[in-house]
Length: 77
Image (cartoon, rainbow, N blue to C red; front, top):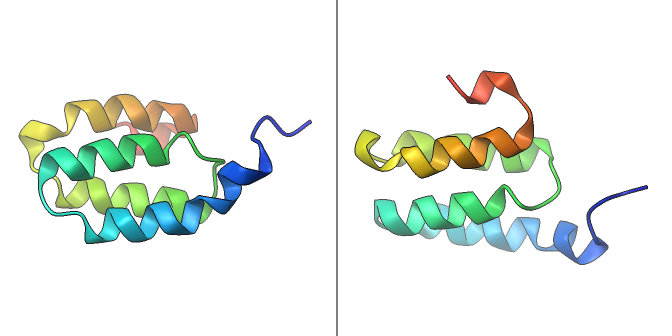
């Protein structure tokens, strides 16, 4: 059974587009955190990692918490 409703999967591409256009660490962190609530996919992972790299170190704490939702230990280091 898929735990994500089909509409959530459809939101992936628009969310990534908005995230890529985000300016400012606060906006980027909020969007990346919400992105991690969507069904896991390579696109979601890449977009999250790109947002993490663009975000200032002082603003990454919330992103680290969101990364734990992927259950991928390589993203939480």
